[in-house]
Image 1: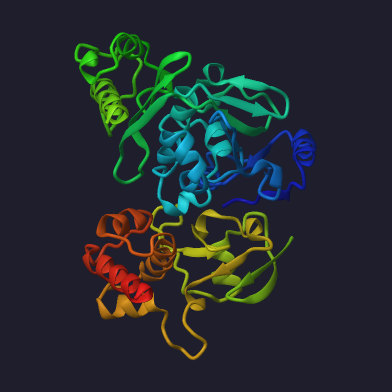
Image 2 (image 1 turned 90 degrees about the vertical axis):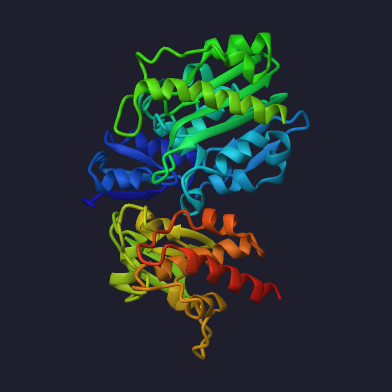
Length: 266
Length: 155
């Protein structure tokens, strides 16, 4: 790995000011993607600003109405193992428990996953599908406005995620078809029956997580796997690579949505 | 820059660079070469150690991130008199290794797994070891070893 400076931020304000003073600084969260990227020189920051020692960024709070607030530096394993999250939003706990492998889940964080916005990451499906809110030190960003493109988010220069707030859906499920080696989603679908209606988020299939509106409309009329029998997603914008063709991914999105509905109804 | 941590119960302070990986600190500075560097890309799990009780891949963590942490490596799990940890013993008894390269990581991951799941079934063991690759055994005897170790510690 090439030389890089390191700064352990004492507080969010400290992290902000060090970041502001380094044009090529990067935030280090759990490091499960970033450190690998540094080894490959896909990222070459001059300094890493570690948020690991800021207690206010860690932890889970579940309100009486089931709203789940997850601190940005909360690890996947903590979300997966939280009895409160399992009770309030079981799909969220289950999704977190199937990211990567156990060692990755013991380090990787929700804030890091969202700021990175890998097209095949799992958390973006939860945030978009459940209609969560991303809270930074400057503002609150609705999930529908957060994911802009491949590895691209609404986060501005110097903006740091503090926590993510998930309203509890009436019911929801996440089903992914994972790549057996990387365990990233070839396609992952989160189906949620929420106070605002049916929301369906698809990750892994396209350059960025997206809502499958055709599936949402069909399920709004009839919440049943059979309602999706004639739904075919347009594959023009979907990923076509050595793992799966775009047509395969389009079909998989519908199939996984059906399985998610089945899981919700079970 | 300096990092201070506890390694196998011993306080350690070491001069490291920002880029120094925890696996580099353990192997190159502290001579704890039982932690194996396999892929160096956080896939194979041979470098698995415990950081504050959690199994992590030490090639995917900076030494500086372990400041103040309690780190346990494969060298730190046997008793001081040399009696093997039950998981090590089970790997030996069940022939859960052939070349042995993945074994330190497998053992450390398996100990973390059985702490979280004291009586794991085969599926739980296989899922729990997803972050560790073995190219020799076909995993069968590794699963047997973890089963044997867990029934022994809960008996």
